[in-house]
Amino acid sequence: MKVDSLFSMKDDKIIITGASRGIGSAIAEFLCEAGARVTLVARDEDELRSLATRLNNKGYADFIALDVTDLAAVKNSRIKDECYDVLINNAGTNHPLPFQDVTEEIYDKIINLNTKSTYFLTQLVVSNMLREGTSGSIINISSQMGHVGAKNRSVYCMSKFALEGMTRALAVELAPHNIRVNTVCPTFIETPMTKGFLEDESFRTEVLAKIKTGRLARPNDLFGAIALLASVASQMMTGSSLMIDGGWTAD
Image (tube, rainbow, N blue to C red; front, side):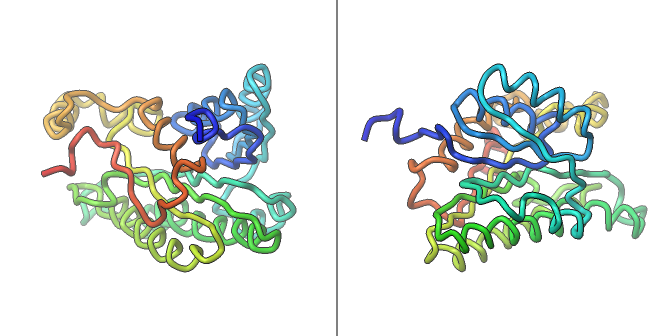
């Protein structure tokens, strides 16, 4: 098999959450340029429409304005009528705080988006794959923090460790149906979510000291892992975690 066909995503139907900005919009643009038919999901309809318009100059993109934490809205969205080849669960949030300062509201906000919404959206997408008898790939955007601990990130780490556990359990359960489930685990990437933290020079220095390659990750550092997991090149990969962390978790 030629390299181009091995990693081909041409005409694959791929749905990605948290798609309107940051990592999500960068991955969506990459997928469109690769020839995939991309469905963008996020809350802000104006941002989605603007992004979809731009991406349609490069490929195909449509969008669904949806709060993925609203499970009733998810179940009633047109996602229930579509059969996708690939689901990329990218939507996520963080609110770093010392353990003693975490409120129930903050706890629920992080867990509901990072873990609960991912679980039930995946359940909906997989139900369509099973109904149609198609193979598929679920790619969960996790974090290096799903493999290590960090101060002020107790809830975030918990949510990502849970995502890693869910990924492995679903990999076992869905493998007989030719549905693969894997995670991509980046280190810090300067996005709207992380920009505020990284503007703190002492925190930025602490982060860079742990990244063995000596720099923050960029969104395009994830593209190779996405192409691998979304294509037939990874047919024998399920329940795996691809670390895009510059060596943070190597020691």
